[in-house]
Image (cartoon, rainbow, N blue to C red; front, side, top):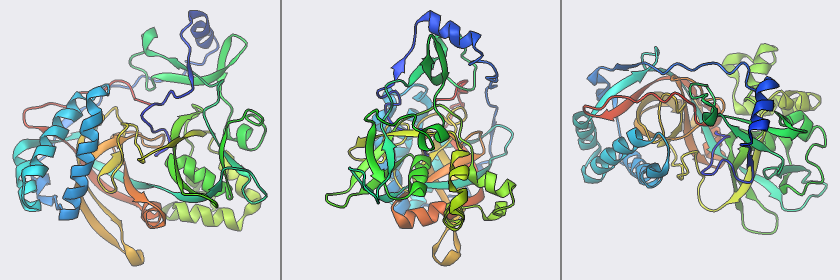
Length: 400
């Protein structure tokens, strides 16, 4: 998600600065209920955590590519000075060290490990990927489910200019109703109604509404066209509604045991219960808009993601470009799992990735990556690595 990712989040959307509109937002209660987000506490972790680091040659190569991509973007990114220092230091180590063991030894010499919040490093690790789906640039009986560009009536109200620097969000997204900003259309109003019909926003049409939904969740994908080369599509914005998990909905309703909730389990349920499909999908009111992209897939940092070296995390706790030591188990062929004890780079964010104990590992592109990402839901450990002598910098506002 992940959904909510791209270099330019305000693409085609409008920024509203006029005081009368902001006053209308405040008086209408649109800012009510935004909780204060206290800065996170950081605790030094024992240096023994480096003993679990097990970089293979393939891991080191992927890490080098992620660091190169991140280092190019970080100088232009807000709140990224901490991440840039770590990325540059680690990039030098990875380039100069000859073996994975040498990398581990030099990382232990050059970095200090920290944990964020009261987690003790405990984390829930999930996975995401870039799907490849069947689609068309023109609608037909088969291809009936559109992907939309950012609507022209989508407006964004930045909160920082009005002194809301400690809010848990840094902007409001909605549309104008007269002189008041109101919430934007929900998934039900867009896909189940006609909120965007006739506006010329369709970029492509898909054959399967579940493919469309999970493309929204992942935030980017590759569309395989019937009469041309595949094209990549990426995140361009969202309707501003919070992410609501349909997996949690199905678990709460007793449809799928919580321990068994995976992307494939949800797909199977929707396929076996077509009458339930719209109700379940519309539960998640968050809606993603797209744009055509070249290269990528890109995370919120604006850098190309690298499989098993890029992660989505909460930027309040792990600023862009942060170097993280991640320990968990990830799916392997045949239903087994394998240990993952590697270094990863914070290159993305996600609507469902909140708190210091949530990590979303990018698993690559295509069906095989999707199988891994769909099954990945493991407990693990996450440590923030900083160059020796450095101290973590709390970020009071979440970057959306």
